[in-house]
Amino acid sequence: MKAIRRQTLGYLLSVLVLLVLWQLLSWLLEATLDPRRARVLPGPLEAFLVFPRHWREIGNHFLGTGARLVAALLLSLVTAVPLGLWVGHERRVRELLSPLIYTAYPIPKVVFWPILFVLLGIGSEVSKVAFAVLVVFFQLLVSARDAAANVPKDYVLSALAAGLSRPKVYWHVVLPAALPAIFTSLRISLGLGIFAIYLAETAVQLGRSPYAGLGFYINSSFKAFSFESVFAGIVAIGILGLGLYVLIEIAERWLCRWKYL
Amino acid sequence: MIEVEDLHLAYPQAGGMENPVLAGVSLRVERGASLAILGPSGCGKSSFLYVLAGLIRPTSGRVEIDGHPVEKPRPEVALILQETGLLPWKTVWQNATLGLKLQGVADVKRIKRALRDLGLEGFERRYPAQLSGGEKKRVSLARALAQDATVLLMDEPLAALDALTKEQTQNLILKLWHKHGFTLVLVTHDIEEAVFLGQRIVIFSGRPARVVGTIPNPEMGDPAYRQSQTFFDRVREVRSFFQVPTP
Ligand SMILES: Nc1ncnc2c1ncn2[C@@H]1O[C@H](COP(=O)(O)OP(=O)(O)O)[C@@H](O)[C@H]1O
Ligand SMILES: [Mg+2]
Image 1 (cartoon, each protein chain N blue to C red):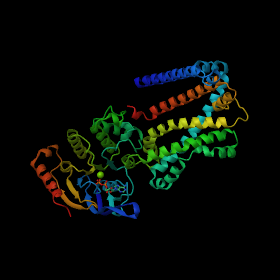
Image 2 (cartoon, rainbow over the protein chains, first blue to last red; image 1 turned 90 degrees about the vertical axis):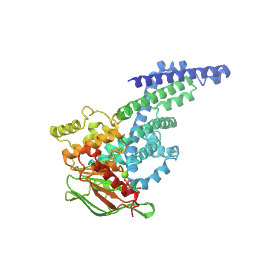
Image 3 (cartoon, each protein chain N blue to C red; image 1 turned 120 degrees about the horizontal axis):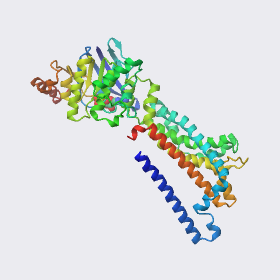
Image 4 (cartoon, chains in turn cyan, green; image 1 turned 120 degrees about the vertical axis):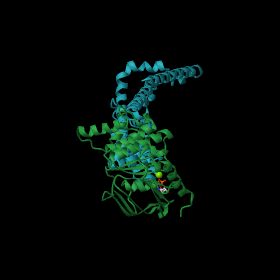
């Protein structure tokens, strides 16, 4: 309980520090640049004042981005983790497939973006989520593989000796042993996923759905020279990221509670 | 009864080479008897136990337990490993019942009794990280009792314990052995432990392992044996094996 309170305090303090830095920076620009250029960095207050006026619009974009992000993360989790655990745990598969994984891992996935868009429909929801999955998938795959490959042999042996079948060893040994590493990787994936969704949302502005996403909102605000709105959008993305981060943290504390004794 | 005849085991190595680990091990352990195995580090003692536990298949040779060839892990055969036998993400209760299909109240009662006998009552919901080294060992023993094992294989189980806890746990193993009558095969690098717990002490050569000595030790069986002259003489006898270079 104490740890959680301390952590909450930590989050609040960091937000506060960020706001103060932002305000200082915006004052600095105001003092040094001519007003037309200083406008690109409005203060926090100006940005926050956008919310009461446009909360419904921003809220809908927030939902759009959030839904895409969560869908992409969940899809990546349910595909990359089982595959990674399997590749990492089975020696033959590991030897066979690891080179392939490590070749694919460092390729910047952005290069596939136009291809995906053309294949899956320009601006379609599927293409946006698919792009984020592509970015996040390998991150999770590599860490699940590595974690499964490093499960102490004795854990597996004693479970097998206790009569667990091979599929059950995955559930009772390999997955729980790899889970802390998977959560670390999921946190990194969250950042990557936000980046990918943002990019996908800014790319295409056909059919302006109210749920087009914060990427779209920020981008179109830029084009309209509405910098307060740009920063309101950035704040909204920050809130989305922080919220998901906290959810991941709570899930980890629950599922890996044996690590936090 | 455990019967091992002309057991050979080689691990495949990179480059198609083979690493011979067991080179014709033959031995036999009567039902309810105890055997201690001593041998230099890396000679293949753990591998030998894994074969008995059905975890790895030997290259050749015959391995039978109670007349059945060993082909896969079986509930009558329990294996206790040195450090990491318990799963850190499972509670004491979950570890003690790992792999068991609990059927009804009788099973639950039996496991509760096993935990109580081992002084683990009230510890059911703790995680291994919340236990002392000796308590962890007792959970491993509880698992063996919970699965009603007739054969208990132990791979250097007490190596990480402090001297006092080690002695207490040795006494406990002795007591359980008397009470439950399982067949005990203990791999250790601790000569005194081998003499305390083994009715017979078998000495493995360096890799690839063969049996190079068998020392009967029928006087064991009482905690007071530790104090006796016979015990010290036996320890000296076993130790002398490691001073002359084995062929
Ligand atoms: N899974 C394995 N694959 C290949 N070689 C192994 C494997 N396990 C053990 N070995 C090798 O077999 C030999 C015997 O190991 P082990 O049975 O653990 O010996 P001990 O328990 O007597 O110290 C060592 O040389 C070790 O490197
Ligand atoms: Mg060993």
